[in-house]
Amino acid sequence: MNESHALLEPPALLDRPAAQQPDWPDPCALREVVDELAARPQLVSPQECDRLRARLASVAAGEAFLLQGGDCAETFAGATPGAVERKVRTLLQMAEVLAAGMDLPVVTVGRIAGQYGKPRSSAMETRDGTVLPSYRGDAVNGMDFSTEERTPDPGRLLQAYRTAADTLARVRELTGNPAPVRQEFFTSHEALLLPYEVGLSRTDPLTGRRFGMSGHMLWIGERTRQPDGAHVEFAAGICNPVGVKLGPTADPADVLALIDGLDPDRQPGRLTLITRMGAGRVRDVLPPLVERVAASAGPVTWVCDPMHGNTFSSPSGYKTRRFDDVLDEVVGFFEVHRALGTHPGGLHLELTGEAVTECVGGTPAVTLESLNQRYETACDPRLNRDQALELAAAVGELARLAPGVVVS
Ligand SMILES: O=C[C@H](O)[C@H](O)COP(=O)(O)O
Ligand SMILES: C=C(OP(=O)(O)O)C(=O)O
Image (cartoon, rainbow, N blue to C red; front, side):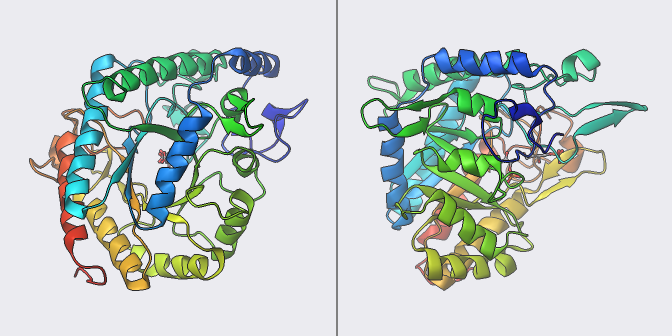
């Protein structure tokens, strides 16, 4: 992993150090790809991004709830019309269940049409003494453990663009007007791969405002949210709604610096803080953060990612998560916000419309022993369709409790 400027020089795409970037072997080829992306049609419009910001402002005000979800890592091969439809329909069905349970409008945002890059704990993977770069998502390299597949290939950024465009076309076909399900649906992904994001940034000729045109909402991950890092610099320069992931070690002072950097005008709906603390820690580490932000930064949108703090390895070696831990973190998130008088604004989930066996629990239950039946994720374990709908129903129930009621 290259934490310095190497991929961005010379001339630099952004001025600051960029974490979690692949070691692209050929900077000239990468530059050409950035230029080619810059010449392609934008994937989303400023008007759509502004509409999402307005919807998220309602979430921040406690008048709506955000459902954000999709694959951990989308793959090119997985972007079939059928799979996209099952994912979109799962999300829309969850949104209906949540809306009914909460008596609030639900803003639906897919982790879709751009979630092709992954930050990794380790830059390299070793198998039988052979060391190769870790898989960083289909936009970077291939999953097969060979030098050819694992070498980062900037041509994949163009394939990511084409797959995102096809996926988005399918989403619009399903949810646009006229469509089988007429419902607002927005896209989002982690703004991790800066050449892709910079290549797809545009200045709106009508307003002179700059937008990241690869998706409606872009978020910065837990591993790349350094207040003085390139990802924050990039996000500060665009007008999309942006999210920031916050893990259990998030320091309130850093979070306030991020808010100042990313949302200096305190524009409602601009900034979503996505907390992923883990079921065991959320009740301890979230309150001081929410208190500090509420006291000094004004309204932001708080969302719970109950996936990333609850991952463990099964005895047979599968990365997994327990449905009960996922639900428990959401319960803790509601408890904390209710106790502090802030709005538990939404969920950020890794899920799929397929009947995979990647997370344990739920009904019908996936067990540690049955994980191998359909373990298909390219990175982290996702809720399957049944588990996702069960979670939506449980969260809807939770929300029926009067504000201030603490669930034991
Ligand atoms: O989705 C999040 C991260 O990319 C993922 O958890 C990293 O996984 P790793 O710890 O196996 O690298
Ligand atoms: C990498 C992710 O999460 P985090 O940044 O919270 O670890 C993710 O949501 O894909």
